[in-house]
Structures are given as C-alpha cells and as structure tokens.
Length: 431
Ligand SMILES: *Cc1c(COP(=O)(O)O)cnc(C)c1O
Image 1 (cartoon, protein in one colour):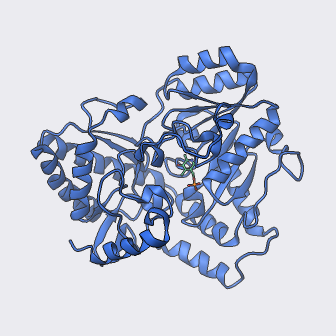
Image 2: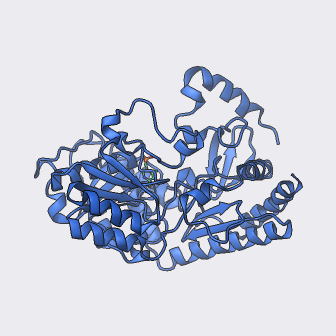
C-alpha cells in the first residue's frame, strides 16, 4: 500500500501545524509511523490522499453513526445552506432539537447547546458548582471529559497515549479541587464522600468509559454514585458525549437504569458537525444565565447547520430497530475477531455496549479496571494496528480508544475486517 501523498503532506504539515495535527489523538504516537491524510468518506469507508480505501472504525471519533455522507444529513445541510449559516439569534430548529432530546432522555428537562464536548463538560461543572456553592469535583481514573483544566488529571485517551496524564499549563490550584478515584470501585466513592461529602459539588463520570479503550460499569457502580450524590446533595453528571445516542437511543443511562442530575452530550448529536450540549434537572438548569447567575455563552451555539445535521441524525437513529441492528453487527464483528485470535493462540478479549466496542490484548477474561487496561500488551496492539491498516482497516491509532460501528457497515465490510484480522493476529502470534 502506497502512502506517498500522505507522507508528503505530513512532512509539510509539520512546518505549519504543531505535530502536523489539529488534535493529538490523530498522531500515530501510540503505534509508530506517520498519520495518514484523508480526502473522502463513503459510507463505512475512508479514502486516503493516495486513494487507498479503509473500513472505518473511528467514525470521526464517534459522531458518524450513520457512516460518511449519509443522504439524510447531506440533504438537511443543503436545505439549511440555502437559508443562511448563522443568525446569532434563536431558531425554530433549536427548539425542535431541545424538545427531541428532552423527550428521548427523560432526565433532561432543559438543554443548552454549545460547540464541543469540552465546552459541555466545562459548563456542566461550573453549573454544578454554582448550584451547590461547593468547589470539589470527583472524577475517575481513565475517564476523559475534554481538555478542561481541572479535569486533565489521570484523563484517558490522548493523554494516556502521550504518556502525560497531566498537562503543563494547568495550575495546581485547579487540579487540587479535583479528586480522582478508581473506576468501578464503589468503596472508594463511599470513602471519599465520608471524608469530603459536604464539599463535593459534583461527580462526573463516563457511564460507559470510552477513553480508556471501552470499559463497562460493573453492576452497582453507577448506583453507588447516584446514592452517594443524593445523600450528600452533590450533582451527578453523566458525561455521555461519547455514549449518548451511541449505545442506545436514551444513552447509557437508559441501558443501566441510573438517572443523573446533569448529562453532557456531543459527537453523535451533531451529525458530524461541531456540537455539544448539556442538560438536566430544571431546578439546576434554572441557575444558568440569563435566568440565573452561572454565566455560559457562545457565539455560534446552536449553529443552524449543526442543528440541522443533528436533527436529521436523531430522526434516523430514532427509527425502530436501529440500535438492535447496530448492536447485532457489532457483536458479529467481535465474535469473528475473537474466533480468529483464538485460532492463532493470541490472548484477546473484547467489551461491547451497543455500537461501541473495545479490544484488549490481555489474558484476562474481562477487562473492567483501569490497571487491567494499562497492563494490556501494547506491542501486540501496534503490530495488529499496522497489519490492519495495510489491509484496508482503519482503527484508532491508540490502544486506549473505543471503536465504533456505523449503520453503513455491512456484511462485506465485516468480512473484509475479519480477513485482515486473520493476517494481523498471525503477525502478532509470530512475535
Ligand atoms: C470526546 C469527549 C469529550 C470532549 O469532546 P470534544 O468535542 O472533543 O471537546 C468529552 N467527554 C467525552 C466522554 C468524550 O468522549
């Protein structure tokens, strides 16, 4: 497979863009080699600058649950384009979006749109602090909530890949207000609340963790968060920027039956355009300006283009059977991968929630804790990644990312992936 054009563009980009990328997760630091450049997408396929085609399991890091260039999204965008790009004032489509989300996620009484997931979590935390009059934030190891200053402590994803769990430029005074606890450890939560309960403004968690690969909540974990937060008057925030409209129509909160006070959304809700959102209990949302004294604003918030794409997206994923189909395809893919790993004697296990999955080069039967994720064989992942790439399968270039299946992935794409995986596991077994 030739990557001449990509290599050329990457060399040029290094001069003008830090590290040649506009988000560190796009670099190939975790797998070696240089990132590819892409010029097109077509359903489940990505097309790189050298015209190579890949089955895409990154899906723009989550949003593309319908695949690339879905006709409904494109049509909605074209319709809005003919009416203008932005008005800096309210639109009927925004109202439709808020109403739809409130109907699909019963824990959300009111919704505010922002422009990214980071903005959503940052605003939700400010709101929780304003509402409670408290300062402390509790987060979990391996959970990523965007690049918010106070949350860049033991964050997952890009931060893990770079081996820099913390960032320079974040004042210690900020992170001193953040308590980091182990994921799936209700006792640690109980202990933390016993000591600091009266000062904890909020607990923020990925109810399905998708930034330390894909880790599911163990029974009782989310329930323990709900119970402790209610007991101490702290706000429970589910960061569903990744899991919202990805694992089920009602998000992870509908799968696990635990109701948060605030929910943050992003990725799928924007249909591929830059969008985030946060919403929840009416009494809490009432604290936001202009009604309340917690300030939050955005020039392009509720962008008509993004809202048009998002509304079309919500209509499509709201169709009967959408998530059942997606989950079934994802299960087929994972069963096929496990079969091939086993045939080559490669220790390998997977996690899945709806159309979101994780693959682990691990001897463990199930991976549910952060240290287990960190203990996976990163050398095996690197070899696997590159053989998959050479055989036309594009995976996230890091062992700490979740994978995504779209409705555009069909039998052909899954078979193509499994054929590539057969070669990739063979290469892993040889070393
Ligand atoms: C991607 C992500 C974010 C950040 O969203 P951006 O749009 O990249 O700012 C926050 N939380 C979770 C769980 C995410 O997966």
